[in-house]
Length: 345
Image 1 (tube, helix red, strand yellow):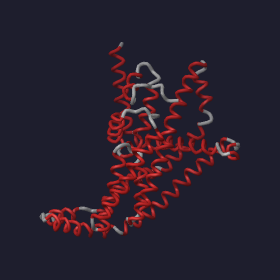
Image 2: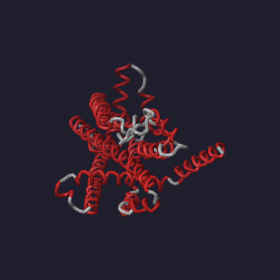
Image 3: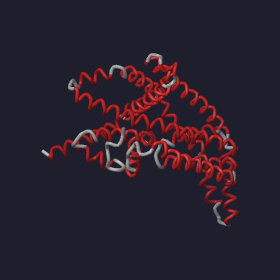
Image 4: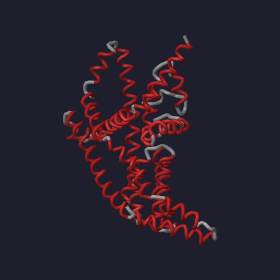
């Protein structure tokens, strides 16, 4: 029996991986819709604490919270589009500055890099690099209609779901157990998304002010990129700092402004990521740092940057679900940070 169970588990894992690879165009928009739904629930909870607004019917709060989120996303996309247009106009300047930079490096270090880097710079198409960079961001909003459609049906399903759960589990103990499991997922994912969004906004706003002061082109675009990449654990902040640093060097044609961007934006990342974020989040997610890194690599391999962005919420859900079943509980303990599964309230 034990052998057959292991075979079944292995087959289920293989099927799940195949489905994740070949059905990602369906799954990714749905997962994004679920995350937006969690954000709407967070906004709704905040609004319900306001005296007069909290007395309104739940459906009005849900509608208003949804409109707030959609309005914010539309505003951001509009502002980013104008910044991208501004950035595209300055691309020829960046390409011309490559030769100036290689010349300065050659003169400073007395190394014959001009010919090597000169040929290399001819092959570099910064327009193509920027396009590939933007394609990922465009992909996140490219399926906007599909995400909104999923989100609409999730919102319509929300008030009916408790009745369905009750019908599925007529026994009071089983119903209470499943209701607690759903509440755990809601609490953990909701907290993570809310706090991560807050810290990413703080990082993006401070980076915007710094980039604007230094004089980097399209500071809002780079701030938005920093905001998005901060959702990727560990390496996201490094990439978010590297991109504006590189383009600052290309824009000004010298290393000075790039070093300023590296120092200032890097310092913001360090303070928010290492001091503020741990204080806000604590150990509520209870995920091993090694597991975070591994899941980042696995989901990144399956779904690219979108998978990296979604890796932590998906892992949290898996740990909570696996902790509720005796057969998978050891795996949940292995994935946890401290080996204790019942420390989340």
